[in-house]
Image (cartoon, rainbow, N blue to C red):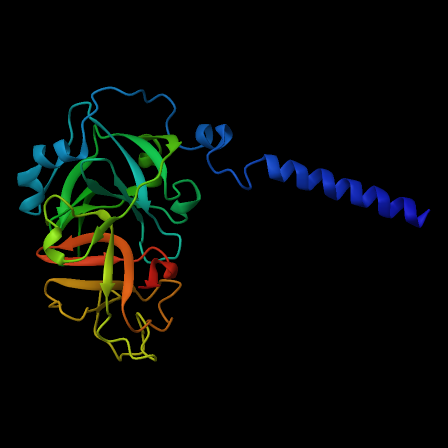
Length: 280
């Protein structure tokens, strides 16, 4: 009798495992996921490239203001960065063959339905285009306590009405051996790999973003510099809330992959995961 129970239990476990293997546990792009997230009524029309979007709103982006999109306008891009390890907060970066943009969303766990490689179609009408530190962003207006206004995070409910999940695509990072290869206007927001760089503060003990007062923080982030580059031109920016904030920074020559955002004339590289840093 006991043996029969064990056999029955094993059969049930096997059946459950089989069901999970075929379901959404390992397939975030299943049809069920696509219909559960986003707006299925969106169809591709009035599509422009990200480069065209940047050109159309160049003045708004460069002077740090914002404006509402009043005509039906769509962009399509592949997610290259999300909040999977907490260093990128309430936003995703998307990229097409021509450029990249940041989409600001007031929601955690974005990586669950917007994994790296997920292509999305975005309807921009009624959303806002603007910038923060001349980094192009899509979202809604926000005014800080100091009175500064800029584009920031849209609500989850609003975002749900403005995108549609498509298929999965690969985006190879732009390999950079010298900072002169990057153009602040053309390349901001792109996925890049800095080849053969060395983190200046790495000594075998220093961590990415300590919160003990040993490093000056700006907006709860630590900026680390690279040998051979001024910190006014290039930094590695890590949030104290990142999962790897207290991980020891590796020494020596490295290949550093991340989202190349800008703050005015400074490149800020945002790691997505700790594994984005590899020995060269």
